[in-house]
Every structure is written in structure tokens, then in C-alpha cells.
Image 1 (cartoon, one colour):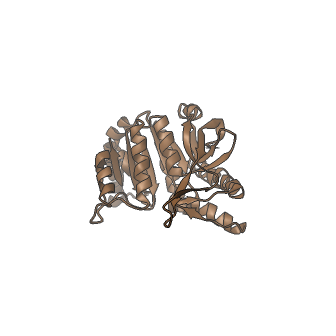
Image 2 (image 1 turned 135 degrees about the vertical axis):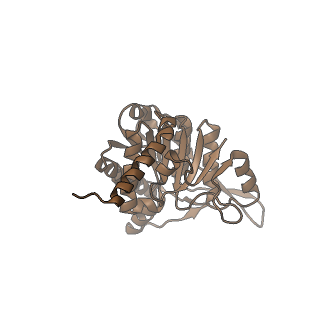
Image 3 (image 1 turned 90 degrees about the horizontal axis):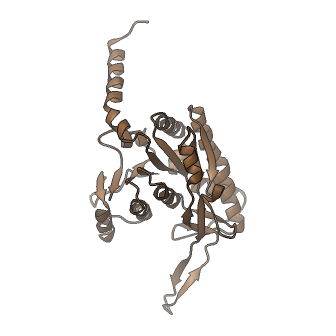
Length: 300
């Protein structure tokens, strides 16, 4: 086969890229990175396959990924198919007993195994589990209150089996990290009385990252990162700057819980957190193995 000049240039470019990645490979050698995987990337087979290859490459480079996934749209579709209504309060799905059974079925079942299969097909060795396994995520009921506009009295709202992590028991994850296995975690928690709780995936990922003192927490979303008042992505901000941007209203809406998760993880000892666009090609590799990174890096 005749080798063209263009092919030779491509090979040289590939070799240069690998060489330039060396300092980053050394930086993250034997480190743990928790990745929250969700959004539109989960529903796109091409993006799923690309993400799976990137995760396998990370493990091959002796970097230990722990994947925590969401599944809100898939849960919504299954509830609709079953004729069960959906109500949200403050962005949280009201989860009665029938709904939490569907949540667990979808998260711990079809979605979890889809990600496991994709990573195994890419040459990795992924294992699926939920927060209930080995009591990885112990949760308690989330409460919400609403103020009556006429009486100004607050009253409690019951949003069902929605939980927040109170304890993380990461020993089961450590056994995977110490091997060549890649854990894929469904954010389903267990209560002290054995109840099943639907836990926000961002919150679960942050709590797990803090418990295992991960080097990085990567929150994959459907946006490029935190933006300033002019709409430009902020590539590098501190915890204090996040607080100021939130106070000024620049960080608002759905970005607030993500930055709150990032700050909470950093307070627990995570090296830094990154909010980045999971739809971008190889976003995880760009963030970890290049100088310019991807998305918004939030550091202590």
C-alpha cells in the first residue's frame, strides 16, 4: 500500500499528541476520577460509544474512573408508558411508592446495563451496581417547604421517596478501584429502614467523590460550562468566585445545584470539580490530558 504524505502527517500528529499527553498521564497516575454521566449523551449511541472508549482508555492509563449516571428522561418515558403521572417540585421528581419502583427498575436495570455493555464492548471490564449495594449510598428523605402567601406560614411538602446522601460507604468501590474493574453506579440510595430512595445523580456523584477523596469530579451536562454575564464560558474559577457569581445572579437556575455539588465535594477533599459538556467529542480526555481542558474548572 502506498503511504501518502497526508497519512504520514496524520501519524506524526497522533504521535505528537500522545507525547504531549505524557505530563498529564503522570499527573493522574493511580488517581481516582468520579464522572457523572447524563444528559443527551446517554441517549445518543455514538456519544455513548465514544464515552465508553474514553473511559476504557483512562483505565488503561492507570487512572481509575468511577461512573455515576442519571436517567431522568428515560424514567419519564417509562412512567408515561405505564400511565403514571409525573410532578416536579423545585426540580425534584415527586416519587411515590409506585414511581420509586420504576425509578429503581430503569436506573439500576436498563440504563446501568447499557453503560456497562458499552464499556465492555470497548474492551473494558465494567460492573454495574446501585447505591443500595453494600450500602454504598445511605440516604434520608428530602423535605421541602412552601410558604402560604396569605398566612405567611410555611408548610411541609411530601415529595415521597426522594433522598439525599447522609452516609457513603465506599469500600465496595475501593475493591474495584484496586482491580481492573470499572464501577458504574446507579444513584439509588437505601434508607435506615431499608427504604429505596431516588437520589439526584449530581448529588450522588459529589458525595461519592468526597468520600473517596477523588482527584477530580467531572459533571457532564448539556451546557459548555459556567458562563459569565456576557455568555462566555469561564474556564477556571475558585470557590469564592462561584459564591460571588451566584450572589450576583450570573450563576442561576439549573447551574446552581451543579456548582453547589462541586463546592460540597471540594470541601470534602476533592482536588477540583469540572462542569463540562458531555456532548462534546472526547470532553473527558480533553479536560484531563490537555493544557486547555474543557468546561469550567472549580478549584479550592
